Length: 88
Figure 1 (cartoon, rainbow, N blue to C red):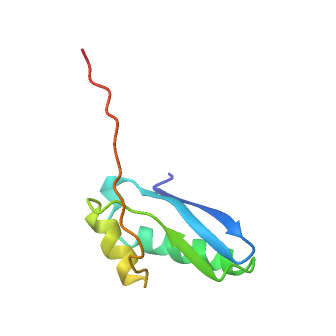
Figure 2 (figure 1 turned 180 degrees about the horizontal axis):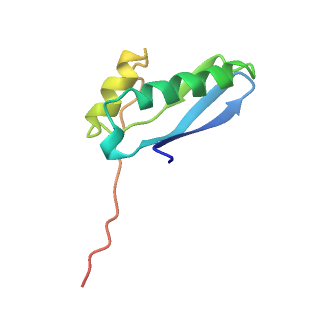
């Protein structure tokens, strides 16, 4: 059963970007996000990537703590807007 996934993109010859990290809610806080980040970054390093970026919303506190623990630092804060369809 698939419980987590990481998607990464190469954005230049030596830089990559983590576009998505997803872990099923019932499997969070079990080290899966940490393992995905380590495997993803190792794979990118094998292709010459030396700089890795990502974006995360402040409301996603678990992810913010994970990324901080892994050594990521906030470089830019910006507003994000969410469109929610209302039933009706």
